[in-house]
Amino acid sequence: MLGKLMKHEILSSYRKFLPIYAGVILLTLITSFSYKVESLAASATFTGLLFTLISITMLFTVYTIIINLGQRVFGKPGYLLFTTPATTIEIMVSKVVINMLWLLISIIVSVFAASLFILSAFRQDVFKLIQELIVIMIQSPYETFTVISAGITYALYVISMLFFLFALLNMIYKGEKKILIGILLYFAINQVASLVSSIFLGAYMSFATSFLTDFSSVWVFIGVYGILSAAFYVLTYLIIDRKLELQ
Image 1 (tube, rainbow, N blue to C red):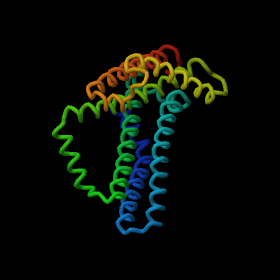
Image 2: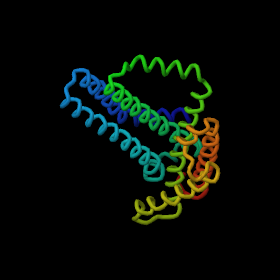
Image 3: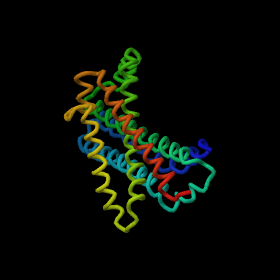
Image 4: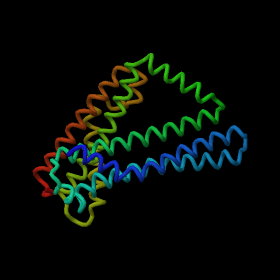
């Protein structure tokens, strides 16, 4: 049943994302070409359009994730979803995996577009630099694995916090001001999570600073946010399965 749920999630969302990704990549190539023809007006215009589209891509991704985890689970579509023979865990896993997939792809596409633009603007050989980057990744498997693990862990954390937010909101509030209460609840949950993470990472340590000062401490980052993610998922499951009448 899990496979069917994930297939349904992909089929219901890929038509929204693929045109945006194609647009970002196409506009990136056009922007890079505009720098080669040395047209200042064209370069400025396409650069502005490119970064606007990148911003729209990330905002659209976050908006879609919020709708998928909120309205489509705890709204009217959610009641239909929970009438299927799928378990609560299967429904949660399908939502988390597919939404995290789109989040990671959106980030990769955006970073690729921004990097290609920067390289083109500074007249760098893009393909040569990509080859050098691949060689570095192959020669440093531990560092590459660590960075990828940190990115996946943080993506899981973002999804888990949003999932828990909507579950908690629907458990404690049934009124008409859900958006306002949800925003306030988000800041409250975020503050608690930040306080917990700062105890282990240090008040001024972030992923960037830990990467620069001591690469091995990135695993502390992974561990802390992995535990926070697990806690959010367990609490979300308990709320859905025992507190909310969704089934």
